[in-house]
Image 1 (cartoon, rainbow, N blue to C red):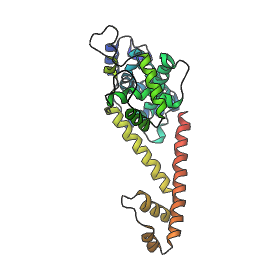
Image 2 (image 1 turned 135 degrees about the horizontal axis):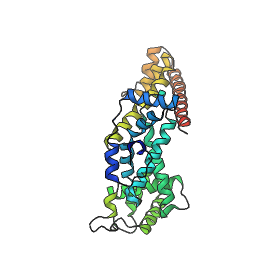
Image 3 (image 1 turned 45 degrees about the horizontal axis):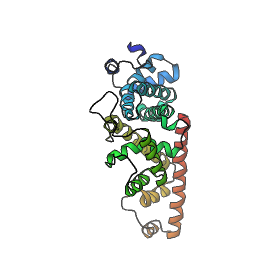
Image 4 (image 1 turned 45 degrees about the vertical axis):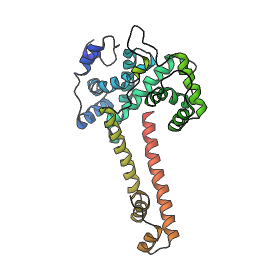
Length: 292
Protein backbone atom coordinates (compact mmCIF):
# COMPACT_ATOMS: atom_id res chain seq x y z
CA UNK A 1 0.00 0.00 0.00
CA UNK A 2 1.73 3.17 -1.16
CA UNK A 3 1.43 6.46 0.71
CA UNK A 4 -0.26 8.00 -2.31
CA UNK A 5 -3.29 5.72 -2.00
CA UNK A 6 -3.29 5.05 1.75
CA UNK A 7 -6.24 7.42 2.17
CA UNK A 8 -8.82 5.16 0.55
CA UNK A 9 -7.12 1.75 0.26
CA UNK A 10 -8.52 -1.25 2.15
CA UNK A 11 -6.78 -1.67 5.52
CA UNK A 12 -5.51 -5.22 5.09
CA UNK A 13 -2.30 -4.94 7.13
CA UNK A 14 -2.85 -2.91 10.28
CA UNK A 15 0.78 -2.68 11.36
CA UNK A 16 1.90 -1.43 7.96
CA UNK A 17 -1.06 0.97 7.79
CA UNK A 18 -0.16 2.51 11.16
CA UNK A 19 3.43 3.03 10.03
CA UNK A 20 2.24 4.82 6.90
CA UNK A 21 -0.27 7.15 8.55
CA UNK A 22 2.34 8.16 11.12
CA UNK A 23 4.32 9.46 8.14
CA UNK A 24 1.85 12.32 7.72
CA UNK A 25 2.94 15.29 9.87
CA UNK A 26 0.60 17.09 12.25
CA UNK A 27 -0.48 20.42 10.76
CA UNK A 28 -0.32 23.84 12.32
CA UNK A 29 -3.48 25.94 12.13
CA UNK A 30 -1.89 28.06 9.40
CA UNK A 31 -0.84 25.08 7.26
CA UNK A 32 -4.26 23.50 7.70
CA UNK A 33 -5.99 26.69 6.55
CA UNK A 34 -3.72 26.93 3.51
CA UNK A 35 -4.35 23.33 2.47
CA UNK A 36 -8.10 23.66 3.00
CA UNK A 37 -8.24 26.75 0.79
CA UNK A 38 -6.11 25.14 -1.90
CA UNK A 39 -8.56 22.26 -2.04
CA UNK A 40 -11.68 24.41 -1.83
CA UNK A 41 -10.57 27.03 -4.34
CA UNK A 42 -8.38 25.06 -6.75
CA UNK A 43 -9.33 21.42 -6.14
CA UNK A 44 -5.64 20.67 -5.55
CA UNK A 45 -5.45 16.88 -4.97
CA UNK A 46 -2.12 17.13 -3.14
CA UNK A 47 -3.66 19.59 -0.67
CA UNK A 48 -6.53 17.16 -0.07
CA UNK A 49 -4.10 14.27 0.46
CA UNK A 50 -2.13 16.21 3.07
CA UNK A 51 -5.20 17.59 4.84
CA UNK A 52 -6.91 14.22 5.12
CA UNK A 53 -3.69 12.29 5.71
CA UNK A 54 -2.77 14.38 8.72
CA UNK A 55 -6.07 13.35 10.34
CA UNK A 56 -5.96 9.62 9.61
CA UNK A 57 -4.75 9.00 13.16
CA UNK A 58 -7.88 10.71 14.45
CA UNK A 59 -10.08 8.46 12.30
CA UNK A 60 -8.14 5.41 13.50
CA UNK A 61 -8.67 6.27 17.17
CA UNK A 62 -12.38 6.82 16.63
CA UNK A 63 -12.74 3.56 14.67
CA UNK A 64 -10.90 1.63 17.38
CA UNK A 65 -13.55 2.73 19.87
CA UNK A 66 -16.18 0.76 17.91
CA UNK A 67 -14.38 -2.61 17.95
CA UNK A 68 -16.89 -4.09 20.38
CA UNK A 69 -19.55 -4.46 17.68
CA UNK A 70 -17.91 -7.47 16.07
CA UNK A 71 -16.99 -5.91 12.71
CA UNK A 72 -13.46 -5.98 11.26
CA UNK A 73 -11.36 -3.09 12.51
CA UNK A 74 -9.97 -2.58 9.00
CA UNK A 75 -13.49 -1.98 7.68
CA UNK A 76 -14.25 0.49 10.46
CA UNK A 77 -11.05 2.38 9.70
CA UNK A 78 -11.89 2.48 5.99
CA UNK A 79 -15.34 3.89 6.78
CA UNK A 80 -13.77 6.49 9.07
CA UNK A 81 -11.43 7.52 6.28
CA UNK A 82 -14.42 7.90 3.99
CA UNK A 83 -15.95 10.23 6.58
CA UNK A 84 -12.74 12.27 6.57
CA UNK A 85 -12.97 12.65 2.79
CA UNK A 86 -16.59 13.75 3.03
CA UNK A 87 -15.68 16.28 5.71
CA UNK A 88 -12.83 17.67 3.60
CA UNK A 89 -15.10 18.28 0.62
CA UNK A 90 -17.49 20.31 2.78
CA UNK A 91 -15.10 22.06 5.17
CA UNK A 92 -15.09 25.86 5.05
CA UNK A 93 -11.78 27.17 6.47
CA UNK A 94 -13.18 30.70 6.70
CA UNK A 95 -15.47 29.77 9.59
CA UNK A 96 -12.57 29.88 12.00
CA UNK A 97 -12.52 26.41 13.58
CA UNK A 98 -10.08 23.53 13.09
CA UNK A 99 -10.71 20.75 10.61
CA UNK A 100 -10.64 18.10 13.36
CA UNK A 101 -13.56 19.81 15.11
CA UNK A 102 -15.61 19.51 11.93
CA UNK A 103 -14.36 16.13 10.74
CA UNK A 104 -14.90 14.17 13.95
CA UNK A 105 -18.67 14.24 13.48
CA UNK A 106 -18.42 12.99 9.89
CA UNK A 107 -16.09 10.17 10.92
CA UNK A 108 -18.37 9.01 13.71
CA UNK A 109 -21.51 9.30 11.59
CA UNK A 110 -20.00 7.29 8.75
CA UNK A 111 -18.77 4.53 11.06
CA UNK A 112 -22.06 4.37 12.92
CA UNK A 113 -24.07 4.12 9.70
CA UNK A 114 -21.79 1.27 8.58
CA UNK A 115 -22.35 -0.56 11.85
CA UNK A 116 -26.11 -0.04 11.72
CA UNK A 117 -26.29 -1.47 8.21
CA UNK A 118 -24.14 -4.49 9.00
CA UNK A 119 -24.98 -5.55 12.55
CA UNK A 120 -27.64 -8.23 12.89
CA UNK A 121 -29.57 -6.22 15.47
CA UNK A 122 -30.62 -3.41 13.23
CA UNK A 123 -31.14 -4.75 9.72
CA UNK A 124 -34.51 -3.02 9.50
CA UNK A 125 -33.36 0.34 10.81
CA UNK A 126 -33.84 2.21 14.09
CA UNK A 127 -35.21 5.42 15.51
CA UNK A 128 -32.88 8.18 16.66
CA UNK A 129 -33.46 7.12 20.29
CA UNK A 130 -32.60 3.49 19.50
CA UNK A 131 -29.41 4.58 17.76
CA UNK A 132 -28.46 6.57 20.83
CA UNK A 133 -29.08 3.56 23.03
CA UNK A 134 -27.30 1.21 20.65
CA UNK A 135 -24.06 3.19 20.72
CA UNK A 136 -24.07 4.07 24.43
CA UNK A 137 -25.65 1.21 26.36
CA UNK A 138 -22.62 -1.11 26.31
CA UNK A 139 -20.24 1.55 27.63
CA UNK A 140 -22.71 2.66 30.31
CA UNK A 141 -23.20 -0.93 31.49
CA UNK A 142 -19.46 -1.33 31.71
CA UNK A 143 -19.10 1.86 33.71
CA UNK A 144 -21.88 0.76 36.08
CA UNK A 145 -20.37 -2.76 36.28
CA UNK A 146 -23.64 -4.27 35.03
CA UNK A 147 -22.02 -6.94 32.87
CA UNK A 148 -24.11 -9.96 33.83
CA UNK A 149 -26.59 -11.43 31.38
CA UNK A 150 -30.30 -10.87 31.95
CA UNK A 151 -32.37 -7.82 32.76
CA UNK A 152 -30.90 -4.73 34.39
CA UNK A 153 -31.91 -3.68 37.87
CA UNK A 154 -34.66 -1.03 38.04
CA UNK A 155 -32.21 1.49 39.50
CA UNK A 156 -29.77 0.93 36.63
CA UNK A 157 -32.55 1.25 34.07
CA UNK A 158 -33.64 4.54 35.60
CA UNK A 159 -30.07 5.86 35.70
CA UNK A 160 -29.35 4.99 32.07
CA UNK A 161 -32.72 6.33 30.88
CA UNK A 162 -32.08 9.60 32.68
CA UNK A 163 -28.54 10.00 31.36
CA UNK A 164 -29.49 9.22 27.75
CA UNK A 165 -32.86 11.00 27.95
CA UNK A 166 -34.83 8.01 26.64
CA UNK A 167 -37.80 6.07 28.06
CA UNK A 168 -37.01 3.32 30.55
CA UNK A 169 -38.92 0.79 28.43
CA UNK A 170 -36.53 1.37 25.53
CA UNK A 171 -33.53 0.76 27.80
CA UNK A 172 -35.01 -2.58 28.86
CA UNK A 173 -35.85 -3.55 25.27
CA UNK A 174 -32.45 -2.62 23.84
CA UNK A 175 -30.63 -4.42 26.64
CA UNK A 176 -32.58 -7.58 25.89
CA UNK A 177 -31.87 -7.26 22.17
CA UNK A 178 -28.17 -6.76 22.85
CA UNK A 179 -28.10 -9.70 25.22
CA UNK A 180 -29.91 -11.89 22.72
CA UNK A 181 -27.40 -11.12 20.00
CA UNK A 182 -24.15 -11.47 21.93
CA UNK A 183 -23.28 -11.68 25.60
CA UNK A 184 -20.75 -9.19 26.88
CA UNK A 185 -19.08 -12.07 28.69
CA UNK A 186 -18.78 -14.24 25.59
CA UNK A 187 -15.25 -15.12 24.51
CA UNK A 188 -13.99 -13.82 21.19
CA UNK A 189 -13.68 -16.41 18.47
CA UNK A 190 -10.18 -17.87 18.50
CA UNK A 191 -9.32 -16.25 21.85
CA UNK A 192 -9.07 -17.98 25.22
CA UNK A 193 -8.71 -14.98 27.51
CA UNK A 194 -10.56 -12.09 25.83
CA UNK A 195 -14.24 -11.29 26.38
CA UNK A 196 -16.44 -8.94 24.35
CA UNK A 197 -16.62 -6.57 27.31
CA UNK A 198 -12.83 -6.14 27.06
CA UNK A 199 -13.35 -4.34 23.75
CA UNK A 200 -15.74 -1.71 25.10
CA UNK A 201 -14.61 1.78 24.18
CA UNK A 202 -12.66 3.63 26.85
CA UNK A 203 -14.81 6.57 28.00
CA UNK A 204 -11.82 8.66 28.98
CA UNK A 205 -11.20 11.45 26.44
CA UNK A 206 -8.15 11.05 24.24
CA UNK A 207 -5.90 13.93 23.29
CA UNK A 208 -7.59 14.47 19.93
CA UNK A 209 -11.01 14.51 21.60
CA UNK A 210 -9.83 17.06 24.15
CA UNK A 211 -8.65 19.24 21.27
CA UNK A 212 -11.97 18.82 19.47
CA UNK A 213 -13.95 19.77 22.56
CA UNK A 214 -11.75 22.79 23.18
CA UNK A 215 -12.22 23.92 19.59
CA UNK A 216 -15.96 23.43 19.80
CA UNK A 217 -16.11 25.45 23.02
CA UNK A 218 -14.09 28.23 21.38
CA UNK A 219 -16.45 28.13 18.38
CA UNK A 220 -19.51 28.45 20.63
CA UNK A 221 -17.91 31.31 22.52
CA UNK A 222 -17.28 32.97 19.18
CA UNK A 223 -20.96 32.65 18.30
CA UNK A 224 -21.87 34.21 21.63
CA UNK A 225 -19.47 37.11 21.12
CA UNK A 226 -20.82 37.72 17.62
CA UNK A 227 -24.36 37.77 18.98
CA UNK A 228 -23.46 40.17 21.79
CA UNK A 229 -21.76 42.49 19.32
CA UNK A 230 -25.11 42.96 17.54
CA UNK A 231 -26.74 44.39 20.67
CA UNK A 232 -26.60 48.04 21.60
CA UNK A 233 -24.41 48.95 24.60
CA UNK A 234 -27.28 49.10 27.11
CA UNK A 235 -28.76 45.78 25.97
CA UNK A 236 -25.35 44.12 26.03
CA UNK A 237 -24.52 45.42 29.51
CA UNK A 238 -27.86 44.49 31.06
CA UNK A 239 -27.87 41.02 29.51
CA UNK A 240 -24.27 40.38 30.58
CA UNK A 241 -24.95 41.52 34.13
CA UNK A 242 -28.15 39.50 34.42
CA UNK A 243 -27.36 36.31 32.46
CA UNK A 244 -23.60 35.95 31.95
CA UNK A 245 -22.17 37.10 35.25
CA UNK A 246 -21.12 34.71 38.00
CA UNK A 247 -22.90 37.06 40.43
CA UNK A 248 -25.98 38.32 38.55
CA UNK A 249 -27.18 41.76 39.50
CA UNK A 250 -30.74 42.43 40.53
CA UNK A 251 -33.33 44.38 38.59
CA UNK A 252 -33.25 47.00 41.36
CA UNK A 253 -29.50 47.52 40.94
CA UNK A 254 -29.76 48.06 37.21
CA UNK A 255 -32.90 50.19 37.44
CA UNK A 256 -31.01 52.60 39.73
CA UNK A 257 -27.96 52.60 37.45
CA UNK A 258 -29.99 53.50 34.36
CA UNK A 259 -32.67 55.54 36.18
CA UNK A 260 -35.46 53.43 34.74
CA UNK A 261 -38.07 51.15 36.26
CA UNK A 262 -37.46 47.51 37.20
CA UNK A 263 -40.03 46.47 34.57
CA UNK A 264 -38.17 48.42 31.88
CA UNK A 265 -34.93 46.64 32.81
CA UNK A 266 -36.73 43.31 32.56
CA UNK A 267 -38.11 44.21 29.12
CA UNK A 268 -34.66 45.22 27.85
CA UNK A 269 -33.18 42.00 29.19
CA UNK A 270 -35.88 39.88 27.52
CA UNK A 271 -35.49 41.68 24.19
CA UNK A 272 -31.70 41.39 24.28
CA UNK A 273 -31.90 37.67 25.12
CA UNK A 274 -34.27 37.08 22.21
CA UNK A 275 -31.93 38.91 19.81
CA UNK A 276 -28.96 36.92 21.08
CA UNK A 277 -30.75 33.59 20.74
CA UNK A 278 -31.80 34.38 17.17
CA UNK A 279 -28.27 35.41 16.24
CA UNK A 280 -26.66 32.27 17.68
CA UNK A 281 -29.32 30.02 16.17
CA UNK A 282 -28.87 31.58 12.75
CA UNK A 283 -25.10 31.12 12.90
CA UNK A 284 -25.52 27.49 14.00
CA UNK A 285 -28.01 26.84 11.20
CA UNK A 286 -25.60 28.34 8.68
CA UNK A 287 -22.88 25.97 9.92
CA UNK A 288 -25.25 22.99 9.72
CA UNK A 289 -26.30 23.95 6.19
CA UNK A 290 -22.66 24.15 5.16
CA UNK A 291 -22.13 20.64 6.52
CA UNK A 292 -25.10 19.17 4.64
